[in-house]
Image 1 (cartoon, rainbow, N blue to C red):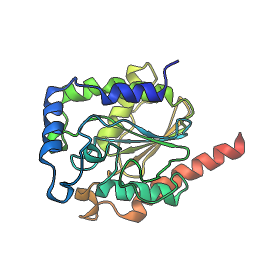
Image 2 (image 1 turned 120 degrees about the horizontal axis):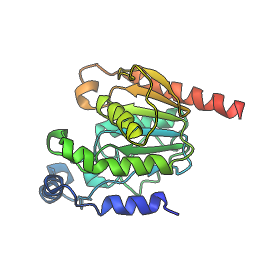
Image 3 (image 1 turned 90 degrees about the vertical axis):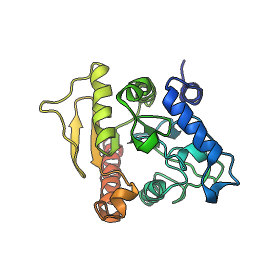
Length: 232
């Protein structure tokens, strides 16, 4: 039977997108001044977390000097600082920070993935790159059989989650769910889809996304899962 371990091995070995391969490898060679002593990961970044998770968090793509450096999604950058702080606060992580792959971080009842697994130039994957990576998102969703809540970080992740579900033959509600911060949709396949602005510096530095706003989404996820636990 296929497992997340096997899937993640396939993800890290992928070379399907020549533009992304060239970019991630170039970044790993040139590095950033404060990380010159690092050996960059420089490969596609697999998902991370609890294989029995009921909460699935979907982001856009690894950061050039974050996940592309550390080898763990949302690790080593400001977005990850916000995400893991929230996950820890609401009981999904054993610590509030994620700095490298051997830092002792463990997730409970939560798994994190991305729509594209390589760091893209300008944080903007092309349509073809999204298509190449969709098979990994599709398989990850299939293997996470106990998921009940999906948090999509940003409109791109929100839309690609629904697009992937539609491609798998699931019936999308009409009208189609629209992204917004704090939106919540109960989908026919017993998943609660929550939308959040992405915790990028563009959003957090400008105040478009505040910590109370961000934490409210994870509080909603925790309430939903607590309610399901009581009813099961």
